[in-house]
Length: 216
Length: 264
Ligand SMILES: Nc1ncnc2c1ncn2[C@@H]1O[C@H](COP(=O)(O)OP(=O)(O)OP(=O)(O)O)[C@@H](O)[C@H]1O
Ligand SMILES: [Mg+2]
Image (cartoon, rainbow over all chains, first blue to last red; front, top):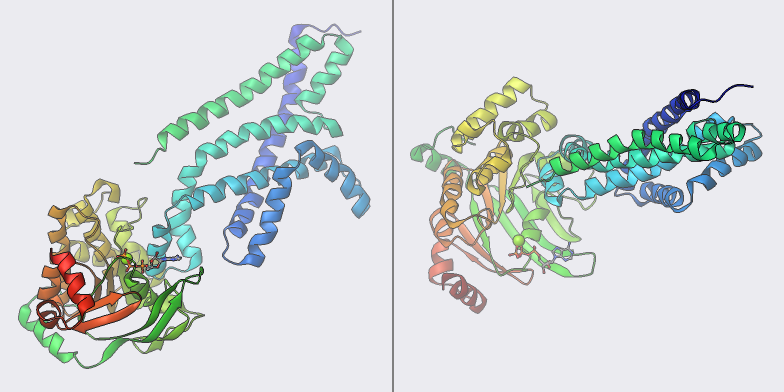
């Protein structure tokens, strides 16, 4: 039987951490893309464009992530007769979850831009797309950076739930290792420290950016 | 339409050249806000090319709403507005075409804080008129010089005083080479010592023959520059006349009452 030293427990956990990071990055990139489109729909003056995005955002914000993971993992296989791997299910669920929150964060930043900015841009003859692209988005992006980075912390922690559908990332790996080492406290403590090392710099960065972007 | 320098003789000649034809025709304009508030109750106003019209009136009378219908920032429900021969229909497909020809200056300046002064002025000609960068830059430089801000071109709006910001806002609107300029209380948000520098720019503009509709309570400016003064109250035009008539011999009680309030 293998001898579990502190070093090789930590080593195994760090290997699994790669998947936590990869899943976080995919969720953030995919969620950012989908979230951006959702945000555009959400701020549209056209009701029929806006309503679907409101429903989407409210649904994914209003249900637990773990429930969304189950729904994707089991629901899609039932509905479409295809089996999703834990990987695929986790990616989809975390992307939708992330997109709903990012869409809302970004909508908030856009709505914080004074209406006079839209008006001035309209009065100059810029069309809607150019008003957004040249005037509103550049200002909103600046404002939304701190809360966006702050939300990245939620995504990293959220990936731990993917363990329940069998995706092997840091939490799942910690559970398996503690099953064989019979040292759950030690193993989960190390895992917690790893999560902290991933998240703390992000929240620190978010706080620093926040104090930097105080306008006027 | 705009000569580079204000040579009074040229300006006067231009004014005479272009007195006759109307550029803004508003007939029976009515508007309700979404809460059913009847803000405009059938307003008529015709503005001729090169004319300077000053609109006064108590707060809430609908002055801003009215002039904002001229560039379709506010839709209206009844009546008819024609700008330079184009009718502003309630659901216009190409409002941008109108807005290109109608410049607007706001009480709160509304400069773009993420762009430099120069970029503020260059933006619309490039984005809307499709000008090349060099061309837009030349034009912006020329306009900034005209409003006396050229030396601040690389600064951001937040670094300028209110008066300077408003002059940049005027240059930004002029960069589109509009046929009409709308001013909505351009000096009301300014400290008293900065009012003059903005009014001076507006005076120059008027002397150059620009068609201007100004909501303002600057009586000195109105007397000196306006061709016509108009009083709005409760969503209607109550009185209009030459500044001489309007200020010295108003016909309506409502006008007298209003003037006594602003003239103290
Ligand atoms: N979006 C809106 N919805 C409902 N009512 C509005 C809206 N905007 C303005 N109003 C109302 O319409 C009336 C006219 O407003 P407007 O801004 O045109 O007046 P104004 O003559 O420019 O006044 P001021 O001198 O205060 O600028 C006011 O009573 C105002 O409260
Ligand atoms: Mg007003």
